[in-house]
Length: 341
Image 1 (cartoon, rainbow, N blue to C red):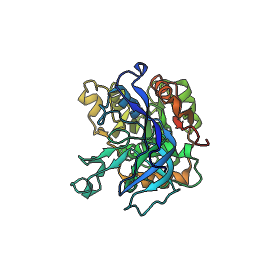
Image 2 (image 1 turned 90 degrees about the horizontal axis):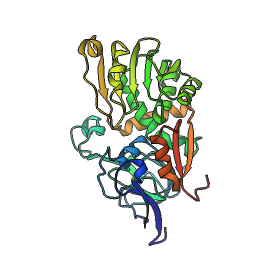
Image 3 (image 1 turned 180 degrees about the vertical axis):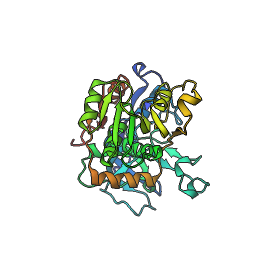
Image 4 (image 1 turned 90 degrees about the vertical axis):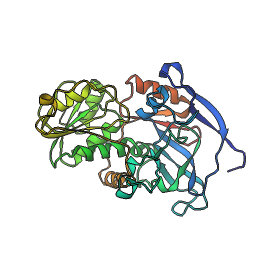
């Protein structure tokens, strides 16, 4: 890169309701990579509900004027002195988990997602709502061949987090899975469960999402209770009121996995109706790099459909507003000007 080059980036200037304009575009210098870092020219950045939580203040920003975006596909334009696994020109994926300490008891026992010093792309570090960003090469991914940049971007959070949520739900082989909410992560995760031989029942108020769920192989899709007891369920909608609803739909011994980084308040639970007979509630916190590698290997074989809504990067605020209003079916992606897509 030319020394002193500049790039445009969206930042969360003052968190608040999305219609108050919390995102602003800034010009900034293209950063230089540190020893373990990659300078990535952004080709596509997926839009995640976590970005909306950051913009609206549900997740308090950890750095001033932080740039959101953690489902990033791009090209390496420069590497730090200690980088060995990537070279200039390589395609690379940057995801939510951006760094861990590597020393705590969680990191040492394969639970790096629980590291107290973990850092996250687009929350602790500037993310992909920009022309360029930095990514730690040790937390970056090589992406499956045959996937376009647009298709690959949502795999890096919507896909990986959904994968971990499915693992946490402990769905038995051929079991019955409930999926509450049907956005970016849910539409990828449901296809994974169907491919594994499960019956998937989707609960969503959106008629468009219901139609998409059935097209993608769901056994049922509607706004009411699933038609049969569930062995497991995943709550993707950030709505705490749905926790008792989902628990009540579980069969004996079933598990509810709550996939979001933010959830509204959970109503009081009735022990006999919601938890008795060994029903379980489990949260999902980020992911490990092994989750990411395992998921990308599995989807490379299964090749799920990625339902895309495309926005130019200069309309990132509009994409978040559409997400907040429920106007996006599938997953939105941002495409920088001049990316050739």
